[in-house]
Amino acid sequence: MANCSQRLELLLSERSRPHIRTGPRYSRSKYRDHLAEWYSPDTAGCAPQPEAANHRRSLAITLKRLMNPKLRIAAITDEFSPDLATALDAMSRIGMSGAELRVLWGKNIMDLTDDELARARDLLQAKNIEVISIASPILKCVLPGAPDVDTRFQQDVFASKHTYEDQPRLADRAFQIAQFMGARIIRVFSYWRSVQPEATYDGVVKALTGLAEKAATADLIIGLENEHACNIGTAAETARILKAAEHSNLKLVWDPANAMVGGENPFPHGYGLLPIDRIVHVHAKDCHMEGHKPVWGPLGTRSVDWKGQIAALLKDGYKGWLSLETHWPGPDGDKMAASTICGWNLRGLAAA
Image (tube, rainbow, N blue to C red; front, side, top):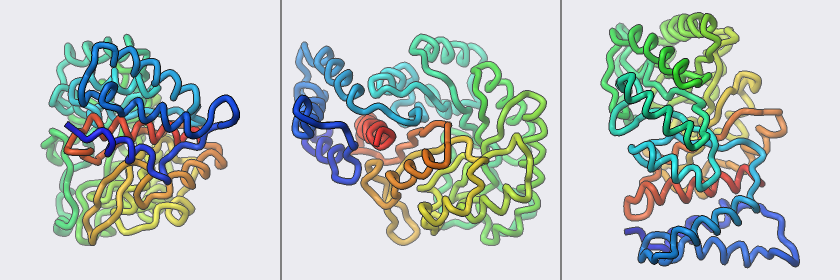
């Protein structure tokens, strides 16, 4: 079980601490006390007491009142738990009102049966949580004829082992799932990264354009995520591809941390290269680099300037979601604790 004082210090780190209104009636020290109670042994699950659940709910209400996000916040559900009900409970306590679906009950979203999808939709509707995006693995495969794969980057597959030949079937299924769930965005990639990414660009543009044309017939959006393990990893690469694939149904899922792992300073440099009007969604996670390896940590405490990035999004009129994709394994490997900490940090950053 994670050390509770460690959880508190991670949450209250100087860079991630939310900016809140303080004054005679509610001081910053009182805010800290509320967070200390949230992660105390009686409330954080380290030594549960019968009254703990009610007390945690009361504290959550207080914290939510003090941190009113200027942008809507969401999460990829399996970052909290592979069990959807468990994840939605935790997300609701933080005040998240949107969800991305990637892995449910240990299965990739693309592999769920119709009955499982109906069960998921019922759980989401019961919590009044909107499905923003189908976080599909489309184009997370090797492009035939491309140069060798760049093995420096870990290839996260999230219970998906689909091949290039599977892509048309995956696309059809993703469109069915998005329409069933009421999601507007289908997240896609750009094939596993080659040692010569530019050699794949024609193939990437062709695939993305085809998906966007298909999306136009269904009033959906193809959201290209910049992913360091794929051919389009940085903002510079993304800007080039989006310019080559000018389609109103092709937009960007901007992930600053992925750009950092790709060797770019994501903010302000990378963000400044992007066509801002084509950012449809934003993923939030944080890390620092040790060589080519990212070391993930609590959101807002590592190398990505999340305060600056969110302020710029607001200034530029962004109206989409900030969606948590924790990646950090958490204190003592406790992923639920990790995503809870990062979720509250995200709420605070969005309220700054």
